[in-house]
Image (cartoon, rainbow, N blue to C red; front, side, top):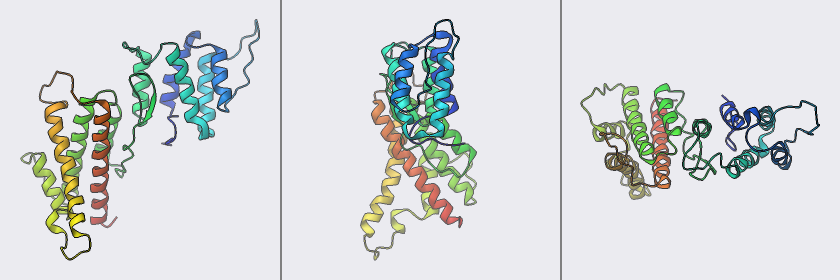
Length: 272
């Protein structure tokens, strides 16, 4: 599937955005025209009395199609349309509608998200190359759908790290079973990949720094797991998390960086 790294221009996002305009709802034709013209995707719409022209929903869908063909200003277009929806109090409210929930999910599956005020952000750190490994792709998809829930983000980040460590061991011929906890799985994965601190040649220039960097991969995994146990999902937890969305996103980005590092080492170990 084609990815649009500079803007969320997938069919799901287009459909979710256009749904705000169905049946004549949402901001006016003139507002839509202003946004499309300002970012170079004008459809030359002209209102004519007693003449049935394209409806707003189809115009938005067509604009997304134009942006896919020439995405250079796609982010500007999406931001402009979101601005119209915010001004109309259709997104960024305390009581999100079904249309807003659908839009958030569509954006999340494309590694983007809306903050509480309806502003668009890239969900950096979720471009992990899993090599097409279905189980890990599923973990990433869950993360992308969790962008409004800090507790769920932390829980899914921990699950991703645990899945990566287990995958490393399985790929290297070790039967993980169910006896190993998170710490045990991660220790063995690091051992098999040769990134325990004691694996570093002490005579290597920069050995101390390399040891610390290798150790930091474990600290990120360890503290993500610890935070999940205290503040994330799981263990029957029903109270709201005390961790901000910004901190949860930082945890996710660091977890994804470590996951990608482990997978790249695995590929090298297997001669890929």
